[in-house]
Length: 232
Image (spheres, rainbow, N blue to C red):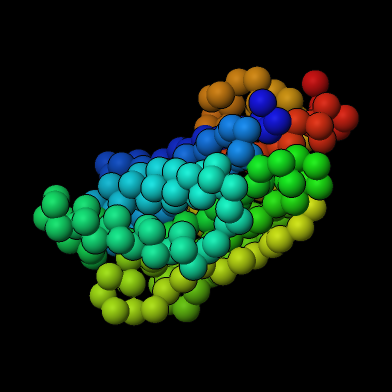
C-alpha cells in the first residue's frame, strides 16, 4: 500500500429538517496502480439525484482506476466519454430520467502508478462546484450563477460538458469535497493521523460543523509523505 485514504459524508441540516436523504456520495480506491478519490453531489432540486451521485462516484473512480491500472495516463476526455456512455445505458435499462436521477457534480483526484510513487505527481479534476486542496492549500470551486453548476449528464442531452483539469503536479496529499464541505472550516484532515486510523471520524467531524448542505470529503495521502509529517 503506497497511499492512505480517508473519506466521509454527512447529511446537511436543511436536508435533515426536510426529511430528505443525503444526496452526496464518494468512492476511494487504492492499488499498485496508484489511488483515486471521487466525490459527487446530486442536484438538490431533483428528487432522486442521490442515486446518480452514488453511481457517478463509483463509476468515475472505477473507470479512472481501470485506466491507470492499464498503464495509461488519466485522459479526462476519455473518462468523460466513458462515464456518459454508461449513464446512457443505465438511463435506458433502468428507465431513469436524466433530470430526476442523474444530475450530479464530480470532483476527483488521482495519483497514477509508479511514476506517481517516485515523483509524487497528482491530478485534480472537476465538473461542477466543490472544494479541493493540495498539501493543505484549500481552493473553492464555484459558486456558479443561479446556483446552477454544470452536470456531466447534460452531455446526454447534447450539451457539451466536460472535466476541468484543476491541478497537475507534485503533491503529498490531496483532498476533494462537495460544495457543502466548502462551507465548512475544514480541519487539517491531511496532517492528522486520527482520520486515517478511524474510518468514521471524517463523517463525525463534518457532522459537528452542523452544515446546512450535505457535505462530503475524500483524502489521499502518499504514504511516504505521511510517514514524515502526520500528527499522531
